[in-house]
Image (cartoon, rainbow, N blue to C red; front, top):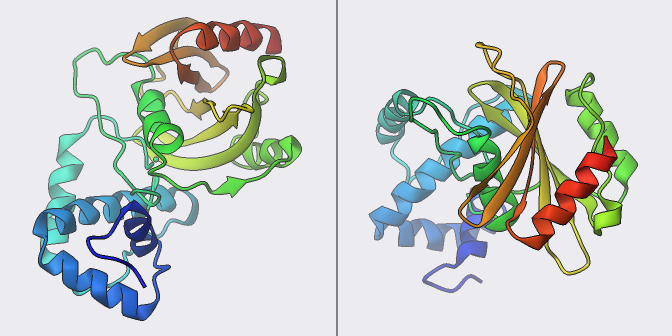
Length: 250
């Protein structure tokens, strides 16, 4: 039985429809008394369905007495007009949700920084754990096969083993540029690096190789035939190690 107030694990289970009926009723009643949390979960639920739609084409949230359909429709309409780019979805999104679907927020500057969606996806999925994985395996070949299924002409997964990182999970995301994917690598200390891929969008914006720091994160980005790429990691010495290994990987 869940304890009240609920924690992130309880919210994740609610978003993924994994709560037993009794616990779900208790959490629904609690949300009815906490409208701010209910609104937050509405946003997560919306983004979860958006991101899942990239694979299934479905965008039908499960019925819930706490979530008023009229309010949800109004919020969806407002959110469509707000973002120039929406990544993650993050769920991701969730449910790019605490494990389920937090929003991958758009960047509204006139000249957006390159691959900002890759950085935001990393924060939601790899760093904060708000987006669940579509695939979790210890087999590199399985992850490569999963990526080939969705992006058959893309570059191979970077080999970061010399830097101590192995790919462990993957997530398909939905962005305004088209379907995107993120593969998360992890080392023995639990540190994480992500490989992100998406199309260049309707304007076919291809990127020269570059690197930039955004807060606590470092992103290396480049373009190949038909796709934009980024590798995101915590800034600092580890980022340089990963960047060096990335250069030797391709």
